[in-house]
Image (cartoon, rainbow, N blue to C red):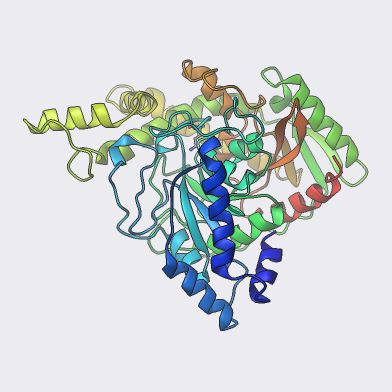
Length: 461
Ligand code: GLN
């Protein structure tokens, strides 16, 4: 898709402005039914710059290509809300590094997309602003937290989108919306200008209709950044030939929808002559969700301390400094965000720190070691992306623990810092199903190549 658009642009069959308008008109006509965007970016300057690059024959594959951006990634001079009332009036003072990189290539940003507040959630229902609907059935959620970006791509409101993934927020909505979502190896993409949720887990990544397009976007945003000390400076990508695929027993047990399991094994059957399939064990994976819901809120509570009514726009009762903090945070944050701040503050408090946080960190190492061991025997791992099909609005929002279970198969990957991609492998009752492909650290490019092979093999369904 991106390559075809690029060809048309450089052949001057279509101008950057015309292409942008085509997408913009589609959004204006149809997005009221889906709610994927929080606001649109109609900025002539970026369009003119892209056209200039094309006219001067300096175009990159992404020059003139519209990109939707999750509203927790800063675009200078535009609002950035993170889906929260507390940042309702916040205008980004600078570009995130990923935005800067894309801007230099002449990509054009078309709008900011809806998300769960501060990226906390699996359905986008935690957004303070609006509901985003599943592209296949408006009664169902699009997944989350990057629901807006996933729907934008699925509905052709933009050929590409950026999301962030802390525990599955790119892969799970990609699965629920029937598209490709990729979470890179931790530290490959700069987090500078991404509103932090849990810094040791957060990673920006692409959404696209095809694996090839996801790869183009990923290759354009990766690389070291002096403004993010967690980016890798010296690294080489690991070349992996896909020969042996691991199927972890623990990811196909109770809790998984039988129909999803059957579909995955049907697809595996179709490629059995090309790859060796091996049953593996990841015994620590049963603790991944518990570990995630300790490490993540601990980091959340620290990262969200900065929203105090002093530094950012939303400010309530100023009768005393304490009242200001209390009322600003009390009215600015939604219930899920508050729950996690409470939980995180508790976990980090004196007397509980060792019992919860330190033990969770030890567990995190064990989860990492599990994967490390397995990647000595297999090249890639297949798991479901989500244990269930997309669910209906309201189905899980009142029961946080059942919502957290949506992350059962995705959080381990973030704890270990690994790359993983969700690929659509078919539909059940009209709703899309994603397969998660996990690779070893730095095998990102090989993983994307492998996913492209699978995409072709399975294209017949
Ligand atoms: N659904 C997970 C959570 O609520 C993941 C969120 C994310 O990846 N940003 O924490």
